[in-house]
Image 1 (tube, rainbow, N blue to C red):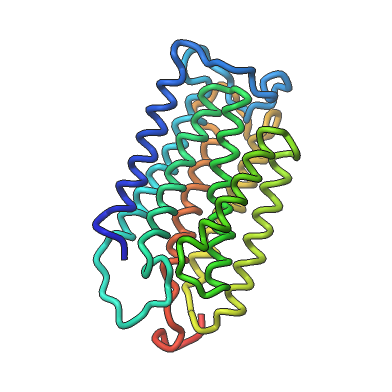
Image 2: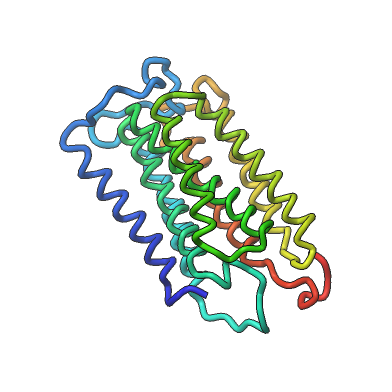
Length: 272
């Protein structure tokens, strides 16, 4: 178990520092070339406003990730009464829940950079924050497949993968959506492999299905809310893309609850 509320404070710090950086970087005008979506007229439906925040609804809804990260950190920091080894990295090693909470929280301000500035670099930062999360999901699955509790091994997998993805983002090696889709497929494949190979553990799969369901609904809302989509009302304060942010934040929180539910199968009395 992690120290008292360490994950909570890491998530809070990630959100606060990210938002502070967002404000500090403005300086009266956003610097950098416009995001390609501006010229194409495909900037997630919401009409661009003058001033600091170009898309208010799409920007402030990103705070849902900060809240989700703080809730993950708060839950991970609660005192627990364990009956012997849990077999759960999220409970046994404080590094994992604290890191996960911070990553989820960080998605918020990183996505705010895109919707507040509508710059090319804002889009890169937004994409990298999503990669940070999905690469955690993949690396965490690999850790459980390897039956390892070493944060060092985790970082040896995680850091090079992120370095390659970051280089690809800045160099434009591949379309962002295609790369992220492939990462999601990889994460699903590895998580299924964990279920099949780690029969010594059971888990509450309901949280996994809930997270996946939230993502499916979020994706449907995202597609219907694209420019010229049936849910696209550019001047409305209620934006489908803002709902996409909130549903994705909820999915990240439910994925943590799935991780947190893993426990020895014999102790649970049934396979999960």
